[in-house]
Length: 305
Image (cartoon, rainbow, N blue to C red; front, side, top):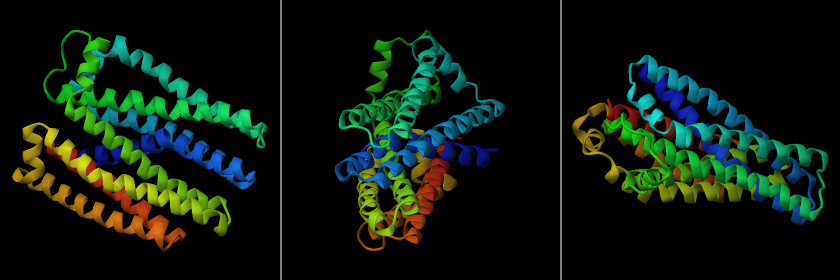
């Protein structure tokens, strides 16, 4: 069951990464299209947005399945902690998810009927994507980081956590660094998926600058994960630190392989950004990135057993 949980959680996280940052990538592509009055770039922006919406739906499904596995495994702390946030965060979270769908759907509907929109129409429709992406990035990574932290620290039961207490919990180092880690991962995943979609939807000459910029952005975000990941590791509970650093051979082995894979990922991303902007190179980068996500997820889950 743990193997299935690792795969489901890794896929859920990758889906949420693209769902959160995909709309922001679509804004960038749409702005390039607006400067050049380029219909292929407008179409690519809509494609990236469609894929963001699909990733969002898939991530919701995978998250629900992962929750069922957690329940089936007898781990009730996570659900008990959820109840402490139900009135103040979880209930309104459903509206936040609906807001994301409405904003992304509004952009797609608007720009499907008006592909060559006026300048102000483009600005307003892009603002919908900005609201969608930032809404996910601001609300959900900190919320579920806090829930996981309390569940692991045996604080699952207790009174309802109000907004003031939640803000205090958000300011803890573990939550801060995990939230930043999620943001950087979202940029990396979105960069490479955008590069792949550009190679699929555009002519080679038009796709080349998109692939270069997207790969470079993913490379920078991945490089920044080194100090952020170190800070997050130091903020973890002592037991999890010991598991990752040698006391648990499985967790330590997975963590070591994940780090080596991350270093290889940087090499592949650099090649895609500066030298080989081909479908093969981008596919290799995507496969390596997904492998790193699975390995890191496996290392974190096994360190908590």
